[in-house]
Length: 100
Image (cartoon, rainbow, N blue to C red; front, side, top):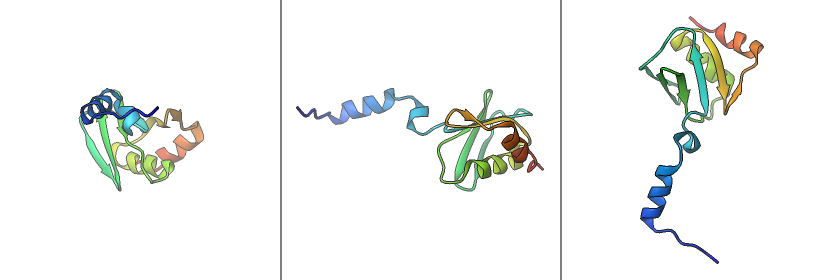
């Protein structure tokens, strides 16, 4: 049996889905110094920074490169994660080496 949703039902469903599930916050970072209220663009990725750190939707750029681009803008990071999985300490150290 097939179910057909009306346009209004589709809109309501889309609004009910959390932002993270819609591609927001695939990447998360916590800068060592606050970057609250910043909106940054690194290549093709838009970062939004608030009280809890910075987040960005999924990108075609490799995570290690995204991390390096972000530290150039906000400085060293305390943490960086991709889809909820944190960078290991060695990867984070390598990323933070790019901070200017």
